[in-house]
Image (cartoon, rainbow, N blue to C red):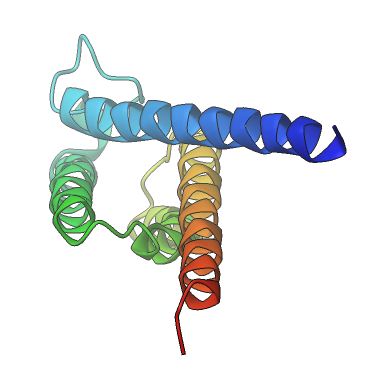
Amino acid sequence: MKTNLSFNKYTFLKILIEFNFYCAVVLLIGASFLSMLDEYSVFTFNEDLYGALDNNLRMIMIYLALTECVVLFYCYISKSYRLMMLVGFFLILMIGSMEFYGEINTVAIDEHFPIFFLYTGISHILFGVMDDIEKRISSKNDDNYEVG
C-alpha cells in the first residue's frame, strides 16, 4: 500500500514539474517574440529614451527564443532533456547579465526580467533533474533485468 501511495505522489510531482516546464517554455518563447512589438510586449522597453541600445535588448530576447527552440528540438530528437539543467543555469545567469548590460550601457532594465529568468531557469532545472532521475532509475532497472 505504501508503494502505491509513493508512486502516486511521484506521478503527481512528475506531471506538475512537466506542466510547469511547458508553461515556462511557452512564456519564454512567447514573451521573447512579443518583445518585438511594443503594444504586446510583456516587458517595458524605453526605446524613445535609449534607442539602439534598447533594440539590442530586444534582439537578445529574440536570440534567446530561437536558442530555446533549437535546444528543445535537439532534446526532443535525442529523447533526453538532461540538457535543460544547463539551460536553466544559464537562464538564471541572465539575471546578472541583464543587470550588467544595464549598468554598462546605462539602460533601464525592466524589474520583471529577474523574476522571469528565475522562474524559467528553475523550471528548466527541475525538468532536467526529473529527466535525469528517470533515466537513472530506468537504467538501474534495465541492469537488474540483465541475464548473466
